[in-house]
Length: 338
Ligand code: SF4
Image 1 (cartoon, helix red, strand yellow):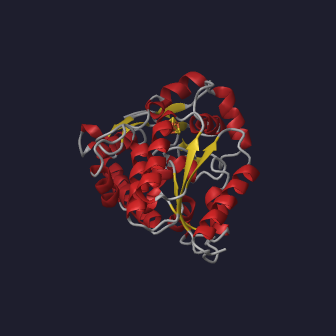
Image 2 (cartoon, rainbow, N blue to C red):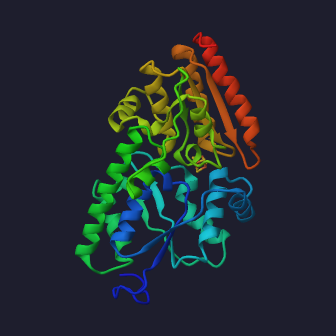
Image 3 (tube, rainbow, N blue to C red):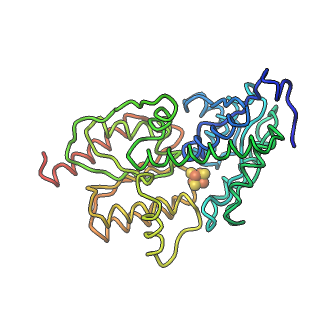
């Protein structure tokens, strides 16, 4: 077992665990949260991304890192003095087949060598290529850092798995992660949908780009306020995504990139979308291939209008808004709605 904390097990002081509100947060927060709370820890999440966090991240990171990695460093900086322990897992493979991009793999090392004064880190490795029980083993090892009570850890893992299943169902129903978190925690979610404009758009990208309002310059919200019906990769059921992957002669090497490509194929093949927007982060190596692949698919399969929105540290809301409005107008004209 790992560190023993003051008051641990006596119900006096809960260990505070910091979870950065970016990268895997948008895919796994309900899992991490239920696990930590189940073993008696208090979960502290960094604030929503903002300019200060981005500036702090830029200061701490190497120049050629992508925007999400820079921002991640800003979130760690915001948490490090407020928590007893930081949760920075080394995510290697989440589907047992491919890995995440190299920056994910080296993330705990990058943080450790870039930021001084860190508290204890949980940087355990999650690699589902090691077998189907690896997720349980990983969660168990995390739980052991807080308690030696095996039954308590097992119960926390059950609760965590139940929570993540509920979360994924909510995403499939069209909720954004923040709406789903709110529903899971408070029993209600804000409904920001406006009256339909007759346009359906697939907005594709990594969860930490699409759902982080600062990174995406509130793109999803802007589209919805225009009445656009927005769909994302997380709204495609897992078996359907995998079918798309099997239909390709070869897949990419990176987990999140494959999901973007597969979702693109899915929405093209079910003839349901009027256009595609790909949100990509400046400095992202895998996106150089992902973007070209989905652009070609959109062009060749059905001539579906396609737009790329590239986000960097200096992207302004107004510029993106103007381009997106023009794109939506083009789609409406094409459908005879204007
Ligand atoms: S996939 Fe791209 S955006 Fe994501 S961490 Fe890797 S380089 Fe950065």
